[in-house]
Image 1 (spheres, rainbow, N blue to C red):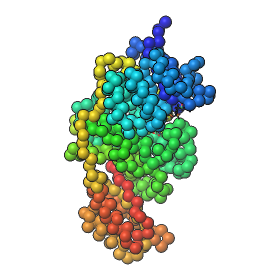
Image 2: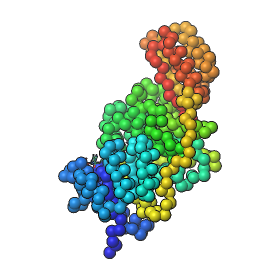
Image 3: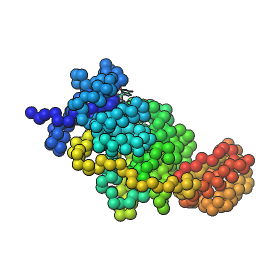
Image 4: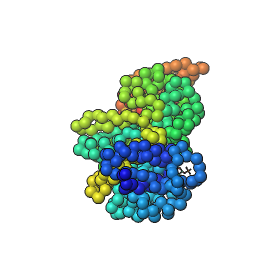
Amino acid sequence: MASVDVGIGLLGYGTVGSSVNRMLVEGADEIERATGHRLRVVRALVRDPKKDRPFPAGDGVLTSDFAALRDDPDVHVVAEVMGGISPAGEYVRELLGAGKAVVSANKQLIARDGAELFAAASAAGVQLRFEASVCAAIPVVKVLRESLVVSNVHRVLGIVNGTTNFMLSRMERGGSYADALAEAQAHGYAEADPTDDVTGADAAAKMAILATVAFGSRVRYEDVERRGIEELEAAHVSAAADLGMVIRLVGIATLLDGAVDVRVQPALVDRSHPLAAVDGAFNAVMLQGDAIREITLEGPGAGGLETATAVVADLVSVVGTSGTGFLQNDACWRELDRLPPVEWSSEFFAHLEVSDRPGVLAHVTSRLAAHDVSVAQLVQRPADGAATLELVLHRAPLGEVSGALREISAFPEVLRPPFLLPVIR
Ligand code: NAP
Ligand code: HSE
């Protein structure tokens, strides 16, 4: 009979935690064949050990006492799958300090406190891994850190939030925002507080982590410009469709002339672009670099079992590399400047509501021309004595486009502040 040689602790036994246990139990033979080790959950921290669980943890495994898990000599590696900054952050620090390797699915914790946590892991000589914190089942961290180590990745473009992609896909087919969100929550895709999903906070944390790993320079959550999907209206979705595009919440990380820009925002995506085909709770990440040109990884971006695959992969990596020093260091080796946001350039889509009077169009285009911003496409639609103008603008710096739109907003004929989104082709 095989012996249990690696005891696993779980911080959290919810959607992801219970799936990790299920996968370790049901995949125990495969893991043992691949690694020579049997991994078994011996302790799992929860708020309420009496609650019914979709996959029971086994007698005596659930506890609400963190010290019981931390001090259990049978717990060798811990998966942090509880979420939040506190107390999860304190627990991870204590575990690292106690010499236990940790793998985490917690993008907010890694994106905000990563520098300190990696320093603590390094000081203790134990590993801290975080594959599950970004894009659930897609092994993008491993690909960036190992497979593309010499590829000089300079752009990462991604759909990294399953909940909002699921919602936007439903809304394209006529579903309402509220129903789509409720359905995403029922599937277990959404964060405990779904505000993190719809405001872009979840995607911003993931893009900070991806940019950090891709560029080798720390990008924190606070460094990411972000905008969510809450302002989107049915009119924007149908205007995009008329232009042959779809709206997606897109993360864009750019390394340009030694400076970094990371942003998350809804964007119009041309239907022929690979990101336009990413449907439902799927995620996709496009990595662009010198030799590789472009690699796209696509797969399930949320869900218990989907995320558990990445947690289990990290547990296996810890077991497979402990004591060798292989890949256990922080990814950062340099400090890069931030690209001033006004210098970030893109094609843009602008939606304006104006009075339908002679000269309005000339006014709008003259302010754009004054900022050297050129119009690629223009659609005008009548709307109750007023008109909407939908403009696609050629590539221009954000500062120039925003400057022109600020001046345009001041015209008395402009009835609402213009709505601006980048266009991706
Ligand atoms: P969840 O279903 O809400 O589970 C959280 C678990 O942590 C629960 O078992 C809960 O205990 C426990 N917990 C929370 N706060 C605690 C505290 N203060 N003390 C003790 N136990 C506590 O969350 P989840 O969806 O599994 O997500 C967990 C982590 O994975 C988060 O960081 C999330 O961002 C990340 N993640 C989730 C997904 C996904 O699709 N769900 C995908 C990728 C990453 P009780 O059960 O007793 O309440
Ligand atoms: N709430 C997250 C999402 C879970 O929808 O993408 C995966 O990190």
